Image 1 (cartoon, rainbow, N blue to C red):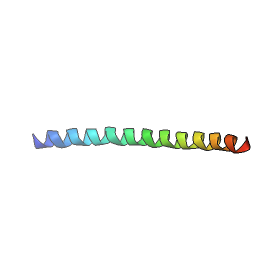
Image 2 (cartoon, rainbow, N blue to C red; image 1 turned 180 degrees about the vertical axis):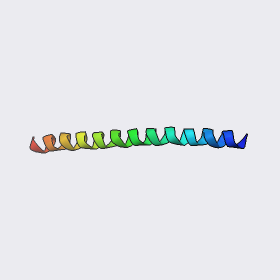
Image 3 (cartoon, rainbow, N blue to C red; image 1 turned 135 degrees about the horizontal axis):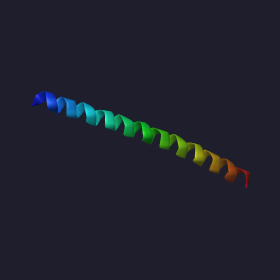
Image 4 (cartoon, rainbow, N blue to C red; image 1 turned 90 degrees about the horizontal axis):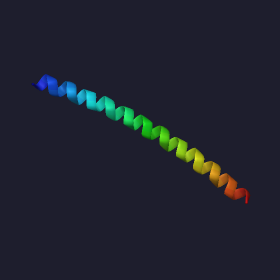
Length: 44
């Protein structure tokens, strides 16, 4: 029973690591886009 819970917990942690990685990528993309927009606004 405990072994099964550990396996389930490890699987959930793997899923969370994937979600976190995707969120980090999205944050970087957003930061780049905002930087580009700011550059355009500065030029106006």
